[in-house]
Amino acid sequence: MTDKAIEVLMTILLPLTGGGIGFLLKRYLDKKRELFNENAKERRQAYQDFVDIIIDIFAGKNETKQKSSDVNRLFEFYKKNILFAPPNVVNAFSDYMQYIYVFDNSDPNQTAEHIRKLTEVLKQMRKDLGLSNSDLGENGEKLMRAILKDFDTLL
Image 1 (tube, rainbow, N blue to C red):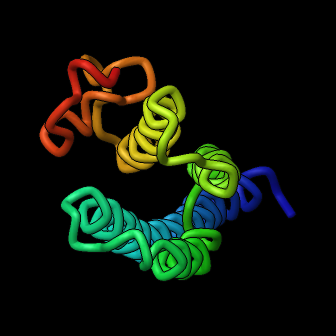
Image 2: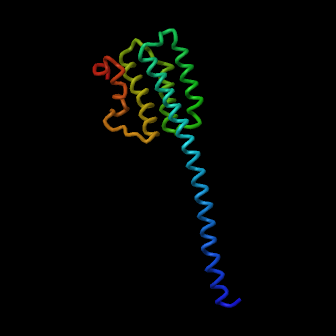
Image 3: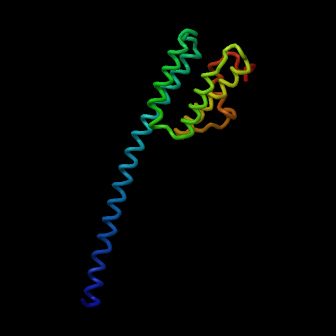
C-alpha cells in the first residue's frame, strides 16, 4: 500500500471507529442511567414506606401492644431497602434497629437517644436522595420537630 492509500484508509476508519466507540459508550451510559432511575424510584418508595411507619408510630395510631407489628413493618421495609439503599442508609437503619431491641420506653434519656438514632436514618435517606440536611441538627433531629409535642424539652 502506498502512503496515500494508507492516509485515505485512516481518514475513513478513524471516524468510523470513533463513532462506533461513541455509540457503545452512549448505549452503556443510557443503560446505567435507566437502571439508576429505576433504583431511585424504588428507594424513594421504600423511604416513603419507612416515613409512613414512623409517622404512624409517633402519631399514636399504634398502641403499645402493636410494638411487634411495628417491628415487623420495619423488617418488611428492610427487606426492600437492603437491595436499593447505599451503605450509609443500611448502617444507620441497622444502628436504629439495634437500639430498638434494647429500648426502654420509660427512660427519658433513652427516648432522646431513640430520636437521634431514628433521625440519623432519615438524614441518611435524605442525603441519598440528594436533599440538603443543613439546619436539621447534627443527626437530623429537627426532622421530628413537627411530630413531637415536647421536642424542645426532649432534645
